[in-house]
Picture 1 (cartoon, rainbow, N blue to C red):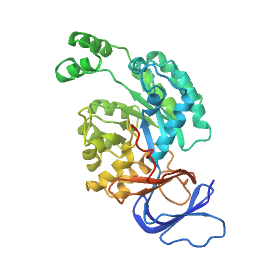
Picture 2: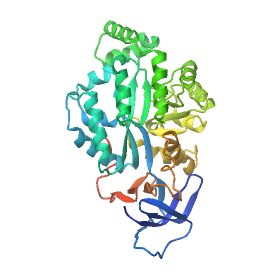
Picture 3: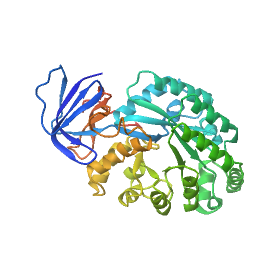
Picture 4: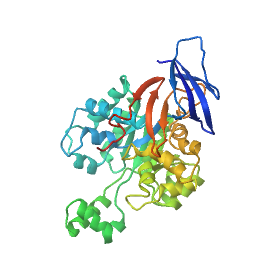
Length: 397
């Protein structure tokens, strides 16, 4: 662990920005946050001169699908899982993600068919978990995404949790709805899968008719997850009835609610609501769902995740400020403190305060685009980049 003094930083705490402040780190933890510079200390510290740059808490990403695509970037083109894990980790570090919950699907025929990977789901879970447990640049955890049509994989959920592989769990239901059977959505589906419209209708009806695990089994699984003190989320809630049912079953997080009305109901039920940062950065949903910028502005989305584009989180923090939607501390909380609370790790991470682990980002925003100069994880400088180097945050290059 490095002992550090970071001087002359604009420190973004959960409530305010401390100008020309300093942070002292010992044995990987923050021991002091001050509004004055530290010039003397009894120990030998590495001193970092921030020159007024922003010092942010490290980003906590609860949902990113990047690991499966890193392992198998083209259908049937598998790479060694540990190689994929290490290369992805570098890019996560480069975009300011210091704690990541790798979202690994289970029970989805479509995803597995699209990937055409040689690895079984158990191969992926085992090897990613093994890599998470080794020395790494950032904090790596697993988010199990369970598709409720995966009736044959139900028992495997319990096994994976009992093995200690899972740190976050969500329930998926990607069965198509009636509206997919006609109009533009039918045409888009047929085009995506290179089918005629009649073939597409037959495929959609087959998916709609698939059996799902019963409500009783879902309740049993949720109870088991709660006993293990794991956070549990629903996914793509489409109706108020759906989100109320999930809340009644004990789920207290909703990922990507489809409409403003559904997201608002989740907030009324005191559920955490996760939105995609890519939606913020692009100015809207690629699927025609709610605008996350608008939902954040109304206070009904309180967490941002990367979803399918890891660089989006850092850029979204500053875009929400630029668009006068949130203050910088409020925007940063969407990506650090709030996800830490939802993941039940806020006693360790999520904000710059005494006693917490020193997961920190030194960010330059002088040219209207955030550039990370240092990523610090547990007091160790994991990422230090020159502006003349190829930026690691250019995720899809």
